Amino acid sequence: MLKKIGRGAATGLLLALGAFLLNAAITATGVVRLRAEQEEIARVRTFLIELGNVFSTLKDAETGQRGYLLTGEDAYLGPYRAAASLAREQIARLRASTADAAQLKRIDAFESRAESKLTELAISIDVRQVAGADAARTVVLSGRGKDDMDALREMVADMESVARKALSERNEAMRASFASALFTTVLSAAVGLLMVGVAYVLFVKDVAAREKAARELEVWSETLEVRVAERTHALSEANERLTREVEERSRAEKAVRSLADELARSNRELEQFATVASHDLQEPLRKIQAFGERLQQGSGAALSEQGKDYLRRMLNAAARMRGLIEDLLTFSRVTSKAQPFRQVDLGVVAREVLSDLEEQVTRTKARITLEPLPSVEADASQMRQLFQNLLGNALKFTKPGETPSIVVSSRIEDGRAIVSVRDEGIGFDEVYKDRIFEVFQRLHGRSEYEGTGMGLAICKKIVERHGGCIDTRSAPGLGATFLVSLPLTRGKRPEETDAT
Image (cartoon, one colour):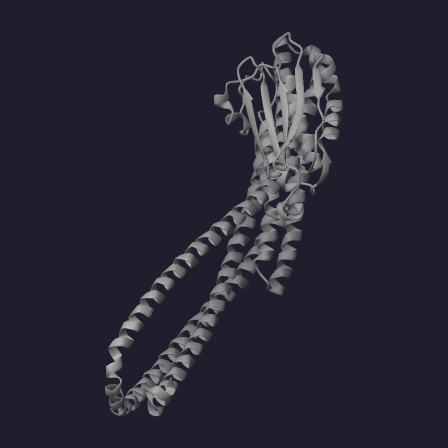
């Protein structure tokens, strides 16, 4: 190529190319430096935001505590507990937002002081609950809480001052880097233009020498142009096809990444919900039930009939709420607390579930036919939950005055096990067949049939996690048949499936 355009022109082009490459390298270096400064500035700003958030949360916790100490109303404990739980998470995020060793030490001291403050708040609330308002007021007047809050305020001011100083220094460094990058870019661009001018002069000298050769090739130019045009057209079409394919692949990859991110976010939310439901939600319910039962046992006789009815309704509502929380936990743990897949004998699982339901089967005098069931690769505990819900529904939704009749059977089709659970109960209109698999959906009132409306939603989620599907056939008064389709073996390892 260089021989064709001439030695002089080639030299000029090489110089120009070298100048432009130098310009690109200098510009890239400046951009990288600016990018690093911007990232550090963003990190410091994030640190300041998180610092303000955690201090605000601690103040919210103290506000809830004060409201409870003054009024004794449990309504103030909700904001206090939420703020106390959130404060620890925010301190963890604050620590993750900086790599500065000095700031990390300050965060450690801040966390210790914050724990002291939260402990003081908890103690005063416990004292208020056990010993009354006067005793709680004595704890507050001891001054420990004020000392902790003043110390926290000073620590926040200290960390904020250091962070803002660092932010100012980073801004100055970024402005200096920008000015330096701009100067070097302009200078290298000017050198590049100069080299282009030199290349142009050398090229003009070479043109005269090449004109003679060009005239000799003129005869062949037309044929060559046609061939080049044809080849260019073919290459253009191929390039367009390739471009479309690349764009489609890029869109598909983005969609997959988006789905993966959404799934990861969903799993994290389920994990967080499980933690909250296990502790923060169930604890108040346990207290309601415990104190309600004490009131019923100790002072039930002294209550009026209306009071007894109110107490009974309160205990029933608390029990229903606890059952609902447990069902929600089961629903969330289908994926978040799943177990590895292994060979599971569905017949053994069904017999174990019927053993668990023996009291209900005996009480209703149910006739249950359990035909041979296959083995599949599955999560054993979730298969047990699946049969528990399906058989429990079959026993529950029975026509008044009639003996339940249930048949559990299966067949193999195309490498899948089709399990059928058929009853002769009340049935339902198939217009509701999609609705019954949704969360909290009930076709009957709680006074007719107990339950939370979560059972079939849990079944559907379990079956879908196993790569299967669930369907139903029913009619009012003619019973219902639930069909569960599960693969006999897994195409992927269970760990791979769970990870995705």
